[in-house]
Length: 154
Image (cartoon, rainbow, N blue to C red):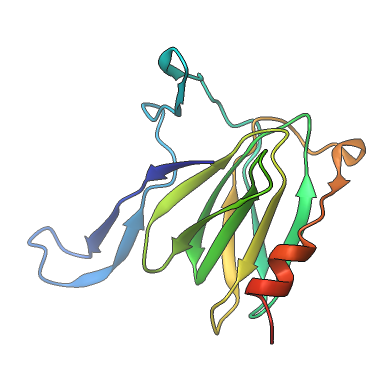
């Protein structure tokens, strides 16, 4: 899993910047690059989203766990707060929080089992920008039983 830092900027309704009317949150810029570090150093992937959509997760609920072999995902929570969990090849888990407290995008490579959990008190809104279009034949289940039993008890 790779994390791209995001940014939140205040917006104003007047040129003098005296009346604040909200904010602008960056999610993806053409100049953004996903860098991966491998045994021979850092390399750039040339990632380009093929689709952009919003999915929501109710408080205490989750999306997944699931696995895609044909596409990677790039997730940013724009309202609420979620944790993106991936299972590493050694069976351990990696957690990254994104949302109101931390503006950042979370890249989940194809072939990586993932789970997104809303641990907040409000519905969470997540923008996903996968590098391939949705394909129902690429929906695979993933087993996170051990993670769920230790981290998501009611």
